[in-house]
Image (tube, rainbow, N blue to C red; front, side, top):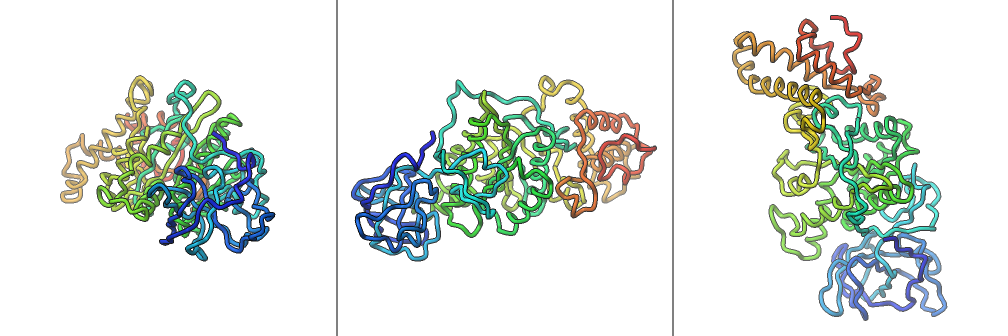
Length: 490
């Protein structure tokens, strides 16, 4: 599974030359055909003397700019065109590439240096530092195209993973060792919610987090790094970014690179890992760009024909073993708020919990803007949650569902036209809707309100009291943006 660049040196003879350059795509005529996913490289200003040295294999990007290498380019083989030619994607900038440049074989697929010192760092797809710190020790490497562990070593879903977020723990509980998707359009709070999960794992469960920024804007990555550091969870966090301005090949593989580090922390250090990806849709977009560059015919709605297999290649590696576990939380941008989009559907099929963020909820000031009726979890059954949790959760859903049914009538005729029973349901539903809001730790510096974490038992107790009518005399505003209801004077 691990594939060290240090085990053998690259061949001093080129395996071929570049014959075509189409943006980030290059066609290489080879003397011997390299396998798919093989990492190749080329360089400008290469010394022609037979005695010149290549950069050491400990350089994850292929070759260092030394000993005559003033500009290096790393390629990943994606297609065999015939018995002599391959089509590859450039993983660096392409300025300076030209026909006739010699291409060399690194001897292995793309791989990254792994070390316990990776925690607290900000890295790129090659495992190189972006935080101005020292490079990771080049003692052990892992192939980013790893394989899932054998079924005999894997474990199924575990217990509930408490997050301290009321609406999540009550209506769509997380699964330890499971996969959770946070779905929503632009600007509804996906990244903020994910940062709160990272805070919860670091503070409540003493675990570690690996964050994969797929196609992140530089501003977003910079803000996240500072916020994670100010929240005090950076020592338990590894941040890996493939930025929006980088090659589609980088954005396509950054998730696999980050997942490789999560697997290392699970297998070698025995950690419980929270693997966070923001945003899986950008991974799909990068795959679509790569597919178009390779000349494949688009499939449904213009997506790549390999969409489902590419998503599965990553999702199938997110597993827990006897040595440690990986719990995944993935932000998914929903184009035009259309949950039937093929990319969204392909991702949904792999998830255990779905958290749907609603623009309508955000417009009302309900944060987190979780849609309580669309969101759900595979854990939502009486045998798994227990009768008390299940019955309270279903009671909350029933009240909120009835309120949603009556909203149009209320808007046209007013709440006074409802029956006494429906008025009581609407009143309790509105209070429950506001109770399920919550100030976050990660937004405390902006909102001016300290974050709160509420235990599941306290959430159940409070919701049960709302359903019984204990808070019927309490004004709605006293339920909004608070933690537990303990100490509220009615």
